[in-house]
Amino acid sequence: MSKPKQTYLSDKVEFDGVKKHVDVNGRVWYVGIDTKLFSGRVEICGLAIWADKPGYPLTRTTLRDLPLDHMFNDVIAAETKSLTRFRKHQKDLEPHQGRAHSDHELEVIAAVYSMAFNGRLPVQRTVAETLNIPISTAVKRIMAARKRGLIPDKINKKEK
Image 1: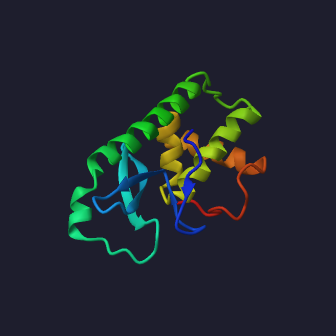
Image 2 (image 1 turned 135 degrees about the vertical axis):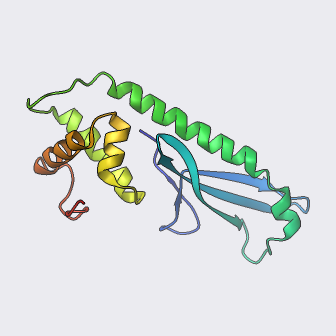
């Protein structure tokens, strides 16, 4: 599972990675990078750029000099490594074929579900792709996690 997102700018803006850059004038800039899982690959889906002190204009020169390709590669590499560790851990779980699920398995389902929901991804598909299971199995496990109270009722009660 990936590490908790870092919060910057305000309590409502979260990024998977934040990179610092000092421009030629000595001004400090931050680039917040957000990622999502697309077809099993971590990709950049959003970014924000801001100065450490309000009031600095983001000039074309500063924007041109930002090493975005390196920043993107660093964040994608970190998120991919985290996802790989998460998936490797999931290989230890066996299909149940109607048997009861352990609390640990359902906690994993709930964690993936929550990350997908917060990332505005299709939750059933994300759970299925992350755990390498069919969508129908993901739906059943999501329902089991919800029944055990691991997914609060207020989170996406109606799934489609």
